[in-house]
Length: 389
Image (tube, rainbow, N blue to C red; front, top):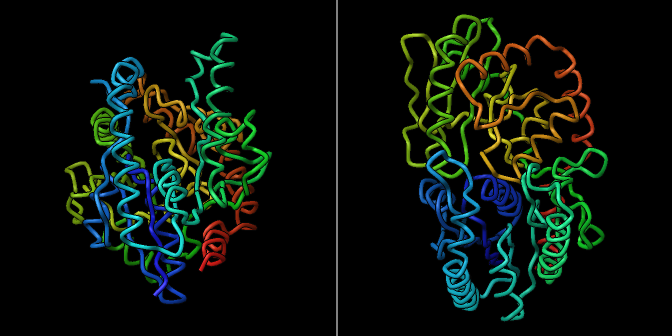
């Protein structure tokens, strides 16, 4: 039995989603055993699907009452984070040594890399954010740009302790997360693999089943997928539910609240909108939808691109990575973006209508899908891990 230890960043579900795609690819072809190490939402998801997982100490950031990233509180708590990170490294060292894997697979977990090197295990890292980014409004000064570059180079040296560093994105000029790697020395040391989503398409029978399940008629379909850390969701959920009252007059609307412990059974509102606490047919709805409304996480936007779907993005307030992802998405003419601080039911309805009425978004989405189809990030990652068996 070939063992793989997967240390995965646990805030949100994007990281664990792509690592599970890699594990499915490995376990589908030979005898491979996985042990996951993660925390927060990713841990809850793995418990739900009964995957082998250990709960590592959580190291994240602080969120404010508005559901956004709180830089002030995060800085104040930095000494506490340092202690937690040290505990996380110690936990990883013990777990890796006890499990004795052939290779360690890290997704955005620096502690797993350090622990692997301490125990002399090879490590393959999947990473889409190589440096600390400031939100656009904080990047005007030369000092902030200098800090970004310095922090990026320091982190780059640590990330590249890995035996392999895989960037789950398209190469320039189509790189969705270009702001997260631009200007760092590590940009010369990574492999662009393409996105790491499952390439399989749902069958016509499966899509028809979802259509019948949700009574989807000939009106356009709007899929509102809410994701991210739990403290960031309430404002988005409230706006989505309120906007559905107006959107349901013109569209089929399906809302997924993205709660890992929530029910998989949809319920229908009096206005005709379908709501999932946890959506088991997410991939099918990406295929069926005409417009996606979602956060601007890397995995979510990459699935929009691979599905050829225009989108209205709502990046988490003050979340620099999502803000820059959304900017590049809009710059590539793939859809529209709404700031979280200005999100209302009215602004969401207006954006959905504008996105649906502008055919150029759909045309550009389909063209970029064709570019994305040339790459198979999951297959590349699977082959890379196999090299260490």
